[in-house]
Image (cartoon, rainbow, N blue to C red; front, top):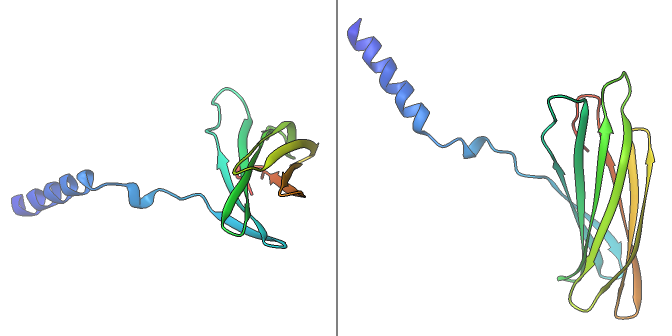
Length: 144
């Protein structure tokens, strides 16, 4: 019995020292072909839920590329109220930045219940491209 108990304790010590990084979830990336050599890569990030409220915050970043050159990045950030039976977007903003000679021109967001939509406009080599981003939330606080 002592050997079994010792073996069990040894296994527990070893398991407690093993890194849990294998359990970490990498943000999912979504690639969208925008035509004419342009494409976007989207990534969703969520902030921890506050204990005192039923508000969750998240963001989606879209990186705009021409061929393999990064020309812009836009991030739509939003807050959602998940306290009731339905989800409601309460606030949204969009920020952008141009790279490698591209310009970030403008951006706008709209809130519609559980969906936040936004667009960011970029200009690169005389071509204007619109990057559209949307962020949704479930009643459980999961973003998609």
